[in-house]
Length: 108
Image 1 (tube, rainbow, N blue to C red):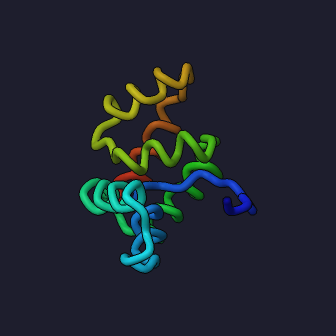
Image 2 (image 1 turned 90 degrees about the horizontal axis):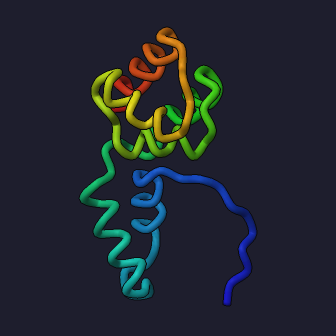
Image 3 (image 1 turned 30 degrees about the vertical axis):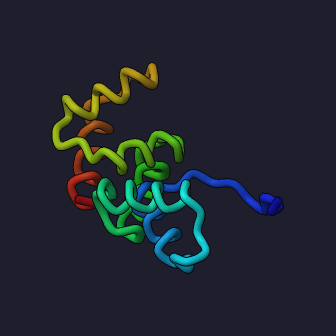
């Protein structure tokens, strides 16, 4: 079994890029299924996704996990974003919601 060297939150777009870099002949069934999922559901480029996650964390004070969740789904409206923040038990000011909305628009 391989040793875990580090651990971090990644978006579906980043998963797609990571798995695409592996030799298709050497990946197992779970990795193949995950790769198929990532190909179908990644909504942005991995660099754009990582940039947006960094902005959301820095400018909007979200956790990496919260930012990655938003990038994976890319909600289109402030109302859709509010559904996620309610699930996180966070009440964000209107200006922060607008900032989040702008960052997500750039990423899509």
